[in-house]
Length: 140
Length: 140
Image 1 (cartoon, chains in turn brown, red):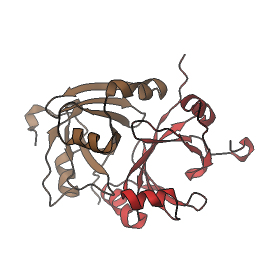
Image 2 (tube, rainbow over the protein chains, first blue to last red):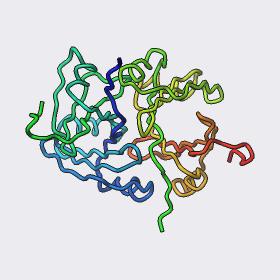
Image 3 (cartoon, helix red, strand yellow):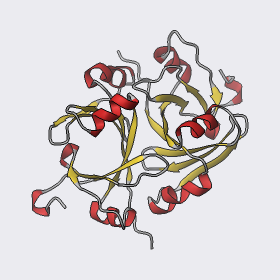
Image 4 (tube, one colour):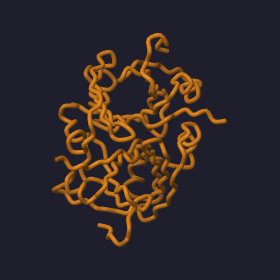
């Protein structure tokens, strides 16, 4: 029996210099509603999530210096990563990254999220647990 | 009244050197079923589409020399573009690219598709008409 790891593509993330300067295209021209707009100082980003039917677009704006800001300075804006929703992030990590350690953070929408240390086909892969984090569970 | 242009994210495309060498991760580890596997000699690509719940992942393998093969040689494999499903591609093009001409092709799944000449935030944007092409309509 195959264990179901990934449930669906939760979001596709676009790294942008300024969400305020970028959002009108996605919200007003493509007509995708904004469903979350979060400042995440502990991750050094502002995250805006748009409902793109069946999945989401996420605009990611670095708000502090760090790897994301360096990426932006070096490469410009670009399609940054895909995030797969998983029912159990610990199980998914153990199956998708059995040998390399993975850090779990609290990401947008108060969900446990993790970037896999090895992407695939040049694509950064994030996992997000479908149900928001409940403190009694422990973060990782 | 706002005219609805984009319906949903139809697919997220990944440019790969070899679909055969890449597909097992998406199909067997992430458990996304393959819903189409098409050779498109007129576009110089093989396209494999996986159902990723609500949206699709598309693996794009260049099969002839051309811009995609050059991209691959220069940049390696990467997250290549987003495709938005639209009910009426002519209407969507007229609203999203009112001044620059856009070429419409018959793409995968026998759908009328078009890349917008100007992407957004460094992201290439494709449109695909939701209903497959019916020859009586004319291609463009």
